[in-house]
Amino acid sequence: MDPAPAPANPDDENAENKPRLNFVEQIIEKDLAEGKNDGRVHTRFPPEPNGYLHIGHAKSICLNFGLAKKYNGRCNLRFDDTNPTKEDVEYVHSIQNDIRWLGFEWDELHYASDRFEQLFQYAERLVMEGKAYVDSQSAEELQANRGTINQAGTDSPFRERSIEDNLDLFRRMKAGEFIDGEHVLRAKIDMAHPNMLMRDPLMYRIRHATHHRTGDDWCIYPMYDWAHGQCDSLEGITHSVCTLEFETHRILYDWFIQQLGIHASHQYEFARLNLDYMVMSKRKFLELVEGNFVTGWDDPRMPTIGGLRRRGYTPESIRAFCERIGVAKFNSTVEMMWLEQAAREHLNKVTPRIMGVLDPVKLIVDNYSEDGEPDLLDAVNNPEDESYGKRQVQFSKELYIEREDFMEDAPKRYHRLAPGREVRLRYAYFVTCTHCVKDSDGNIIEVHCKYDPETRGGNATDGRKVKGTIHWVSVDHAVDVEVRLYDRLFSVENPNEAPEGGDWKDNLNPDSLTIVAAAKIEPEIANGEPGTKYQLERTGYFCLDADSTAEKLLLNRTVGLRDSWAKLQEPRGGQPKRKKGGK
Ligand code: ATP
Ligand code: MG
Image 1: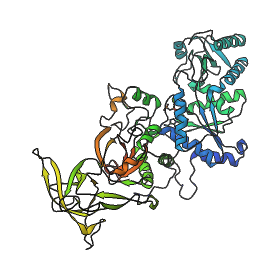
Image 2 (image 1 turned 90 degrees about the vertical axis):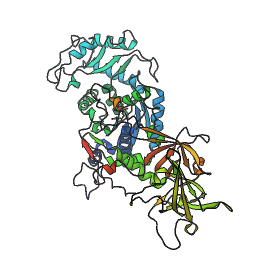
Image 3 (image 1 turned 90 degrees about the horizontal axis):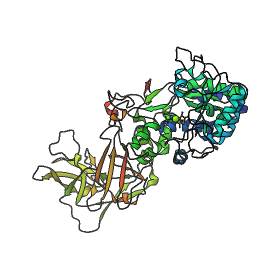
Image 4 (image 1 turned 60 degrees about the vertical axis):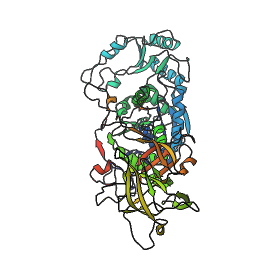
């Protein structure tokens, strides 16, 4: 295994000798040095409970919880649950579960919906101060009158309603006297503002929908911009870190807080994580789930936290990945291989090794006699960690080896089994291939060899060497396991772009899942619980699936031992390469 590259901040060009801080850390350290916020650091992670968390969220989680930890601060979990029609308590639970699994614990748990009353009172205050008004234009009129980037918007005919009328209408909106879309509440800012978000932004819309927490208490719901900053403020957040698409919202975030004169938290924006060959949005994942393109939110091909967990990723590997990709201010796409590499590096340290054959062909050891005691060979469970101990694997006359480890007509550089060639069977003996047997169609059904009893344990007493070592399992002792081999979910680098005349889902890779119905694996595997991880020697890292049972063992390939894609690419340093200008 290659050594892990040192985490570095790719934004910081002369970072060689100084502590490497990302730009948010630099801001925090400056604030602390200037005594801002009474020396407090308080962050939050604010998911909308409208889907399962994905690896992009993990970046935000690691950042926000990581900052709080580093600066002895606090980090809240806040559900941004202001959109009743898309949200569900199922998501609330899964999000909490995923954050804990990643290794973080929030200091306070909040729901934007707990602030509905407070937000309503704040809004009434703005109405009374003439800073917000009820608009009764239709959705189409609202849209048409916003103007364009180059053209100022048009004032609503309702913009100059009296404060009394506005207050009365707003209270009646809340009381449920109107139907959806009949009125909205808008902040009164400037319909000619160069930033279109400042053109009298919506604060409330009427929506007669049952909320997963507040039930039917409310029929008006606050917009993101109206809820988010005020929730930050009420929680005493000091550094409100969000993704770049909110950069243009910052001016509005500040405007509301200024008008209300409440605690000023500050918003900072960092780049969303995008992975190549992958989409990264809850909405798109929902489409994949609902369209049965995947088996569910936790399909091991999905980059959801649940999918990665089921695939066999560890929290440590996800945290290491997030650390390594850093926090930048420009959007970029990170290559998927960095996520896979992070998995390999951690799994290499923590997985017991076992032998398993995915594409079996029989190897018959002709001169081996099974009389006498069972031939048990010592095998090291984890060469990276002695505490994993040893196990014994049983040798026998009939073994399975990988079909690809035998070649009848082998080139010189092929260091595996071929007639006349000698290899080591891992932990066991040197064997020399004699011949193979074929069926009437010419398929190889048996490979035959002779073993050298003097090489027990895998070394020759006469010092002779062999070039190749192959893995094997005993036919009588192996257990059958269904193995799922995963490949990329999408077959194009940027699957967000639909092919001409098509849909982004047309980019799905039709071969993203290959099922091996009956791989032959060391009996040790039958002792594993769902979630147990292994390295199948010479093959890759695997994890027993959540649905695996003693009767039907199911094994997911997390990642191969080496990156077969990386080999196709130019060698490069130890930093994730960024492709600028991602989504
Ligand atoms: P999606 O489009 O997948 O629904 P979102 O931004 O709407 O994502 P939220 O639930 O609102 O999802 O996100 C909670 C937090 O996670 C936000 O602060 C958001 O900025 C952050 N986040 C979401 N996606 C990413 C990503 N790809 N990379 C980094 N942070 C992200
Ligand atoms: Mg969202």
